[in-house]
Image (cartoon, rainbow, N blue to C red; front, side, top):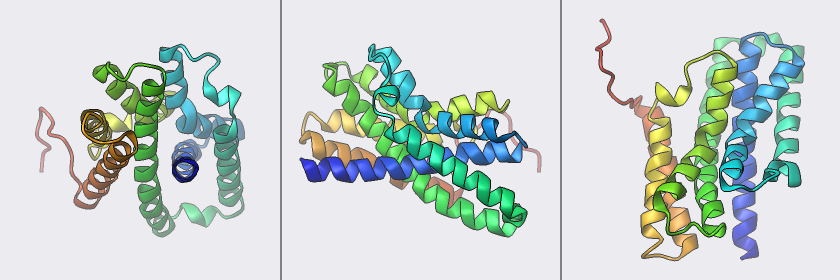
Length: 218
C-alpha cells in the first residue's frame, strides 16, 4: 500500500506542477503582476480539490490541512515567473511550442491523477454507492481549477471549447466507477487513469474536438 500511495503522490505532484504552470502562463501572457501569476497558478493547481472538499463537507479543505500541493504549486509558479522575467525570449513561439508539448503530457497525467483521486476521496467519505456523485467529484477535482483560472482571467473555460478535455475526465471517471464493481479499487483506479491519459494524448495529437452547433467558415 505504501508503494501505491507513493506512486500516486508522485503523479499528483507532476499534475500539480503542470496545472500550476498552465495557470501561471495564462497570467504571464495577460501581463498580470507577480501576485496575479501566483494566484492563478495556485488556484489552477488546487482549486478543483478545494471545491470537492467543500461539497463533501471536508472543511477546512485539505489544501489548508496538508499544504504540500499548495507549496509545490507556489514554488513552480515562482520559478516560472523568474525564468520568464530573466529571459523574455522564452515566450517566443519556438520555445512555447516545445514547452506546450511537454506540458500536455504532464497535464494529461495530472488530469488523470486528480480525476481518480477525486473519486477515491468520495469513496473514502462513504459515498461509493452514489455513482453520479463520485463521477461528478472526480471530474470537478480534475477540471475545477482550470475553470476557476479561466473565469478569473476573463476567458471562456478551456474545458468547454478545446480537445475534449472534460470529456476525457468524464470517460475515465465512468470507467473507474463502473469497473469498481468488478475489479479491486486499485485496479479500477489505474484503468480509469489510463483512459484519461490515452484520450487526452490522442485528442491533442489528432486535434479531436466535440462538434459545435455552427460550422466554422473556411
